[in-house]
Length: 399
Image: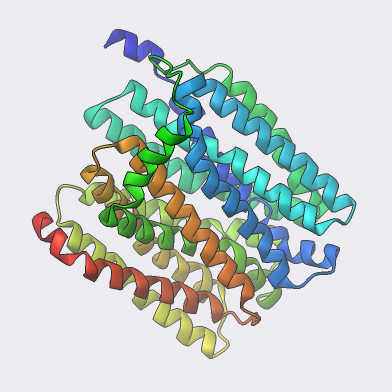
């Protein structure tokens, strides 16, 4: 036990590394309107920058597990962060050169590199903790991954408002370098390295078994649709707040804390109810809260009442419900899995792959009406409800 404590990474560093992917995803979203004007593109085209990032993020979930097993946790994470830094710098250069296609390509590279932060941080916790302590550590990291990027939204709003979209990427570069310095002080938590971890057939067989598990896949889809709703907010929200409500990017960045606090509250509620209440009741309660809040929001928006209360505060209740549903569904799926490493990789690939497809669909919607946001979140919730009903027979054991 003493050696495990000595080898355990510092929680505050892991909180920063686990939230790194979401930070890079959302930090520049308050600058999306400014980016669209700079490149002289439509708002829909500007949203593809988020879509491309999520594509890289999803693919990264499949590669860092084997890399960490072969070369160690620290080398895998440092390699990912270095790749994210390269993508950030080249995206900045592509912007200055007005090469939007290259900018989008580098967003894929950013996502591919940054995904190591989430994957490896969770692996380090699994290496050094067990039982209730591991559950508590994971809960803290999920809370960090949800709330710390809110500071990124605020910083992005301030930077975009004063210095334009490019300053967000300068900040990302500096932040990446600082985190790489912190990672160098982390202990190597892998007890042994696997020389065959990168064998293609072995990776394919391990992941293939997980993708054939319909129970895991359907729960991962539920998690992915919940994650999509967060990215719907970060992608569509700036247009509602800045273009419709007339907020400055700085004001929008500060007000974005309100929905994020709802996300944190949802995670805490889900953790509090775990083991005390049937997952079926937790899930249904969360869905009811989301759908009722969305209904009120749609009525307000339909009557052109787009205010701080009808947008940010109602969205807070939406996020409370969504982030009560998401961790509950994910925990059920992973508790059932026997190969937890590959199950985690497959579920996170489906999670962010679903987000990629969802944001792609959002970018194809030509309307800029505020009603688009509650409508598309509502569709995601209906799909979740349909999947949950399909899984009802299996869940009878959890009552």
